[in-house]
Image: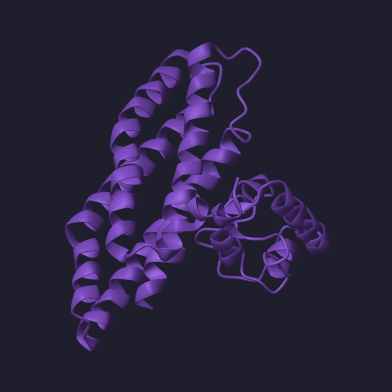
Length: 241
């Protein structure tokens, strides 16, 4: 690793309890993994100080800060890690569509097959799988509708505004972004319910390979959705507010 590859040094990258959770993740993306482990919402609920988020979870803010600064020492931030902060809106939109929207279109049908199969085979001895099946299908429908709408309407309007700003265009975007953020919050709530009903995506001891794979893919979907929503709520959307 060369000095030019490092985006910020350990001395420069320092956090306090007053820093918003979302801003910590924007500056230090590795924090996203840490916050997920602590059940701290850095996506829809990231617009709050770390100290407040810690209090809500019954956590010690000083301990969180100590852990974060230790992670900074172990994982220096590279330019590659924060490249989307400096990218144009068009580049960021293309990244979201090509990575996250594509992931959903490719993976949701596969996860759906797993969820349905496990429910049919193990639903009798694992009654909670009926709720997993219901929640996942609700989430799938919401995500696919949401991403299609973004590509057809919201993203083009954002990019058009970037090229030709106007007060009327900005007012329209504010309303659209408010609705998108509400949809993100709805998806986040479904994911929280899925995590709860699956005991943090922990399969029972008797679970077969497909059962275990289903839980693993659901947890991956959760992580990808958090990253997706974070890029939109805390990066792209803020450019139009």
